[in-house]
Length: 287
Image 1 (cartoon, rainbow, N blue to C red):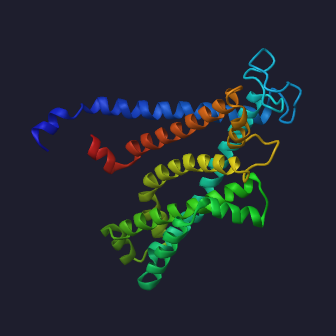
Image 2: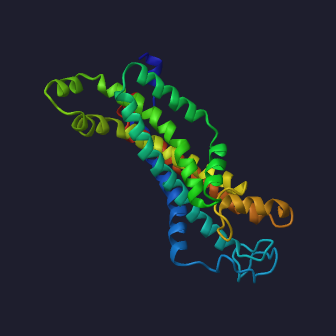
Image 3: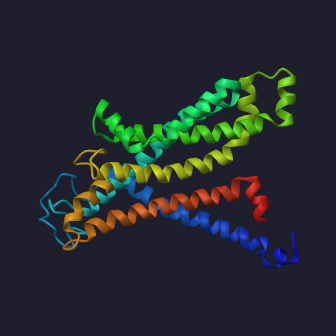
């Protein structure tokens, strides 16, 4: 390290405070959306199919943000959309983690032609468009939130699997793993005792990023009519329905767009904070 680097580098307490602020802001933003989603499970201002508010009514005492072109309460739709977004994010990440970690570990233990075949297969899956996969899933099932979550989760599982494969191969090359195998430790115990504990910090950060991508993907699929059907008010569907009336009633498009951005930014800030906190290599470079 040069003297210039020493002068330019901020003191360690300042870096720790910056990491803490990043994580705190992310948790706050994502936590507010999650709280809205939880509240929607037990209480909504109006029924999701209630059209008694009048077309494109402005914000008022009866409707906090006004109504849409069908007379439905916008705040009710936003609350329902927050629940759908959180469900889509968690559901997709769960599928991606289960499938991706399993495939990644199996691929890491493979050797020779089998290793090359699995690596090429994962690359093909990553290149496969999520939208096309969603269309195939919807054609086989129907346009539901479950179909969208399944398609997004399967698409993300390839990304997770490739990352896990790289991480596991790196851990398997370590001396302590070789010593464990030499002492007679079985492969399952090696994976549980040595591999997974060493890859989970990086994996958790990646899954947090995948959560934000899943939320965006679900909104995009709903915008195209491949997500949760009416009367479920996905943020993507709200954006699609409000684009024709944006000039006369902009709240219908701005509100779900703002919440979508806040949730994704919040999750990304959480991922950034977790990376700085959990990843020893990153801590070493930034300390």
